[in-house]
Image 1: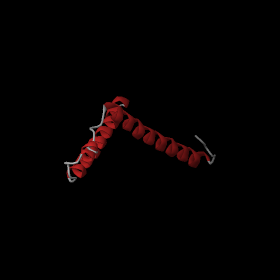
Image 2: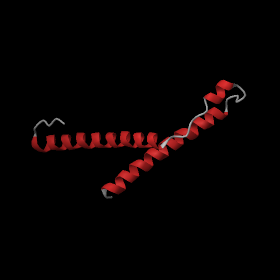
Image 3: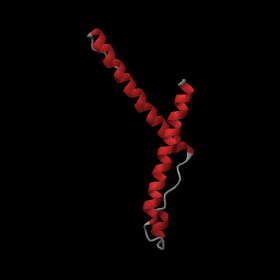
Image 4: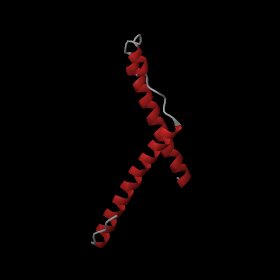
Length: 85
């Protein structure tokens, strides 16, 4: 998988996560009594592109962070030297 495919995969994962979260929120909201004004204000909003991109960045940071930790751990084992990132 090249870097572009990886980024696209991370974006799709974020999009899918946000969409499933929206669907779960809609399912919970649909159980409420929709006759009151307060209930209408609680209706979930579909995620914006900015929110999806933010989630993708969050996922990428997590992946990158774990990769750095794994790399540091492997280097430490191989050389017996402490490596700090």
